[in-house]
Length: 233
Image 1 (tube, rainbow, N blue to C red):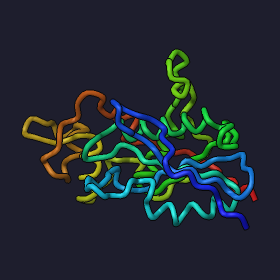
Image 2 (tube, rainbow, N blue to C red):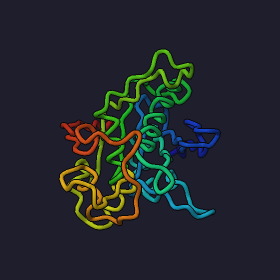
Image 3 (cartoon, rainbow, N blue to C red):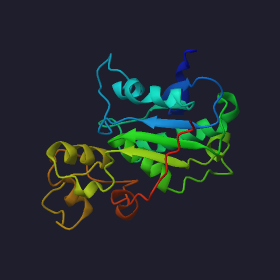
Image 4 (cartoon, rainbow, N blue to C red):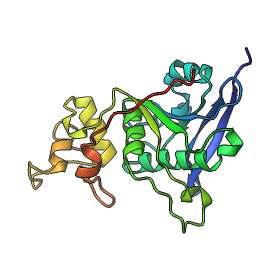
C-alpha cells in the first residue's frame, strides 16, 4: 500500500510578519474528496522553549491521523497561536484561518471545498466545536481572497470537549481557561461576573479580560448539537 504524502510546512497565515498558523497536510491513499482539520489538545497552551515542538507535531496526530488517512481523508494538523503569549480570540481566529486556507486551496489538495470536517480532543475539541457553531462567513470585501472564504465546518468529532468553560472546576483547568481569556479577580470584581467565575480557582496573576473579550453567551457556554461522522468506507 502506498504511503500517504506529507507536507510538513504549510503556512496558512501570518500576523505582523510572524507565522501565526501553520501545519501538516497528509493525503490519504488515493484521491480523496473530504478533508479533516485536526486540532489537538494542549490546554490552548504552547511551550516556550527554544526547541519546543509545534502543536502540529503533537503525539495525538500519530494516534488519530492514520485511521483517517486509511479511510481516504486528507488530514490537516494545525498549529495556532497559544497561551501564555497569546489569548482569546487568537486560537479561534487561527483555526478559522486554517479552514479558510484549506477551502480556498481545495483544488490544490484534491478535496471538495464543501466537505471539510474537524476533529480534536480537549482544547482542540473546543476549537473545532467553535468552528462548527460560529457563523464563520467570509468577508467578500477583504483584499486577501483566503479571508473571503467561509470558516464553517460541515462535521465535527469532538473528544472530551470543554464546551462550557465556566463549569471547569479543576485548578489546572481553571488556570488554562484564565490564561486563554486573560482573566483575573481582585477586590473590586463582583462575584457574579464572568471574570470571577472563570478565575476564582486559578492563579490571581493573570490579566483582566480586556479589548476583544469573550462574550459569555457566545463563547463560554457553547451548546453543541448532534453531529454525524461518516466513514467513507
